[in-house]
Image (cartoon, rainbow, N blue to C red; front, side, top):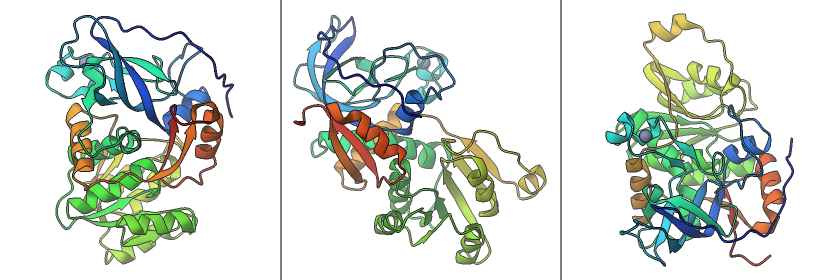
Length: 336
Ligand SMILES: [Zn+2]
């Protein structure tokens, strides 16, 4: 259900102490934005709100007490703005922050020409990583990095099943798993998505509309099942992932677009000693690794389309259509 958008002229935002103003060059569109639009987030949101959580741009104004950053610095912005002071932040586990703010949800985000953010959310763009690459990887790529290298660990030779390999998270997960020496199976709901997923490095890509796709996963792995499933859909898909999982295997999940309530049969779950692991956001280290891998050419963005700011509602409709290959970006500096 689409919400109501308004494209308005606002006065320039002013940075507070410890904050900077970033001139947005590109901002990725995510399912989080769709949930915000649908009032589907489990938290109240005060309106009006500027969405947009995957920001890349250039600093154009710095507030008091900011020493390490100056106008003209090219930056990526971490979307889970951590407090920097709670017990989790103190041990560099910012994804667990007790007082986190969500950029574009609890404070104004990047579908705008300018946005105010605290300096602790900034990461310097490495040379060779342009704004569009950053806006396509900062959130989705670091979400996948957190899932595959922090919440779960991929070992050389593992079988990894990536659900929805043409999505932002899925396309990054395939590349990360391959870089870590895994063999990848994936799913894609259209021919175009399956072709893209194969190009990214999945050796087998299955159509989730075929009811026996979990049986096909078992066949490909000689009845053994996969060591790790990267899941972000939820609902029935999550349950089917258990049918694909080897003994001792792990499902790591970061989303529930297809359903938040599932009934799990615990008997095979504990007999096979499997793990179901939640993953949320990212730590600072995941974001840094994502940008470093992008600079090294190990992680490449898949960009579906780029829209100017005044066509943001069209971009939302495109992501909702489920025909997207990779990331949809908004670029405020692009001429309409
Ligand atoms: Zn914190």
